[in-house]
Image (cartoon, rainbow, N blue to C red; front, side, top):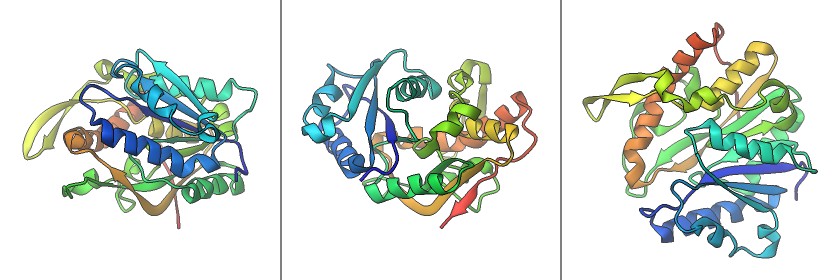
Length: 280
């Protein structure tokens, strides 16, 4: 039962290298598990990687109750972080049924309707809460052992970006987002501008591009305008599946979060730390 007008924005694609059986299972389970708490489902498909409209054909297999909620948009160019999401936000806001809450989530996360409801309730009872999300715990099917920040959220960490929601599973208050954020900053899609940084990966030094974390930049920019805005992180961690072929990409993404955020703090002159509130 939908109490608020909650809209899902999710990003996906099925490339030539994708294991279709696994892809089908993940997408179907993800949507089936949460559709009851959603009024609309916006699916952004990376058209640079998609094969033969595969995702669109897959989604048409849902029954009418679910499929009538789904809107599919093929996006090209895709960008890195902000580009596709901003298209989804445009579709969310430019509709006769205005959203109350916007859930941005990945099918890699094990979400169910109770999780969606809890996030929506947290936003409803906190009128100045901009965003709330679940802590995430990374895993693989073959039990690969992630270390340190590779594991996901670390709420005891000194670095803010490991204690705040990520757009892998974050629900935004639509009105506060429109007022204080508007859109995710396109600088997050500009690795050539942000530069590179050396990191240790599997015992070796490697240079990686700085990009992404549009979520943290949006939060800290909003709190810079209004320090009363709240950011909630639900402590009960949800499983976050990392495919075996994506382990290296995952490790790079997690290790660069802090470096990228420090870069943004200098560029945008953000003196105060990003403050989040743990929720039991």
